View 1 (cartoon, rainbow, N blue to C red):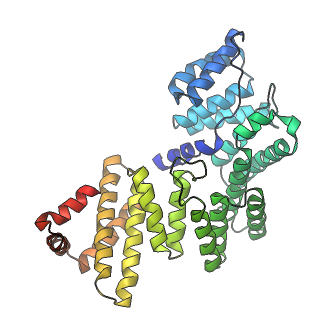
View 2 (view 1 turned 90 degrees about the vertical axis):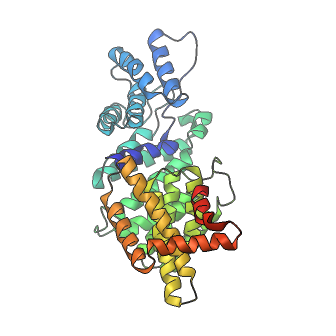
View 3 (view 1 turned 45 degrees about the horizontal axis):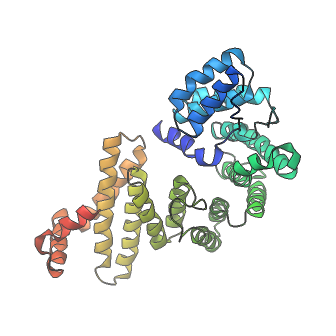
Length: 373
């Protein structure tokens, strides 16, 4: 499905750079094929151009873990998860410790295999990747230190440990040792990178499942504060998908205003995701619901009016992109129906026009707000 493919591709920021290759102009012809394919994929983001070069190289070097890893990455970029799994699996069987010469292939294939698997199989791949990362980090001679640093191994270690914790909070939550495993994985992740937003969000998820909401909120606020004042391109800002997940957790814990701050920033970066508009609308609806219960005036109507805009944008994108998450579509329609019972569409428009007149903008006030969005 589209959502599955997006999930696989978005992790590229964490799992890229599966290997480093010499740019030696005196390299053998087939080695130059691999060097060129790697550059096309990593530097030019051209998986379609890299594929034929990789296939030519593999005709004469069918057991090259480096080539198979790059092939797997190219298939991930193109959304072909089955072909990617096959390439990574073959590489893993040839190179189970990620130490293939000349510089070692590293842990990335195992982390990809974990993401493309589920339950016990995913756990096994993650654990294999974690062991390789720990070996590389504790043994400077295991790899060129410059390559190790470039790969961002501490972040990958945290990502893998948090992936393990998430599995034991979902697929394997009924395992007798699920809670103790989660605690161990999250603790280890935070020891590796104490300020990691990913680790703090995973800690929050665990605390929510334990009904320790105050502790969860503290972890979420700390996660957000770590990158709150940074520009989107800064290296310490988590990937877009992780920030979407942060907004979900903030909504779940009732921190609606902080969730909206996160969602507004995400909207400025990329406003083409139906999930984003759905979450913003749902958050504003819940915020207005609380205001309505407190009967503190008409603030709830303003929140619900804004929720309507977000949710209508969600449906528009959902239909335009032929999105596949029917749950989002159905819940969006349900919320819009509930809003419509309290604030008819005409009433919403009239109030917007009145606001515009008060600002000296006449009847076009509401329309200008829409255009700003």
